Image 1 (tube, rainbow, N blue to C red):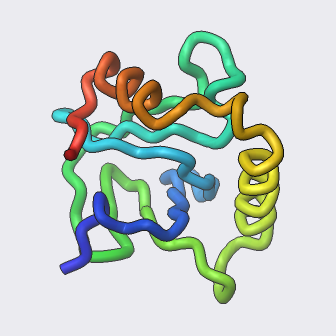
Image 2: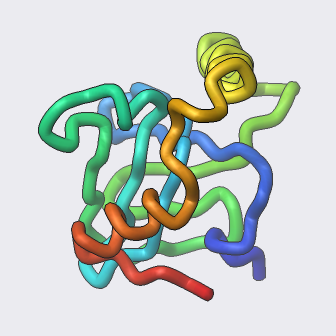
Length: 118
């Protein structure tokens, strides 16, 4: 059984309306899953961070409240999301100081109620 929280490959989440987004960061939350979208740190008032309420099911793909989480792969994925990933990686590499360090992201997630795995 693949544990969502041990996967190191990039992940996408497809909303019930069919929109597929890249997951920049994600955390287990007592009410479900806390998801950080790319560029969340450049937005005001926690836009780009969403709490998806429900139970996480599956072994990959995973499902929660009508959302589907899967590993981003070269084959069979939405080309736009693959391009988003490439742009996000390029942004992170060219702006290493601008993106918050992991302990700060963990602290933000904790403040929003997430469970931090150690």
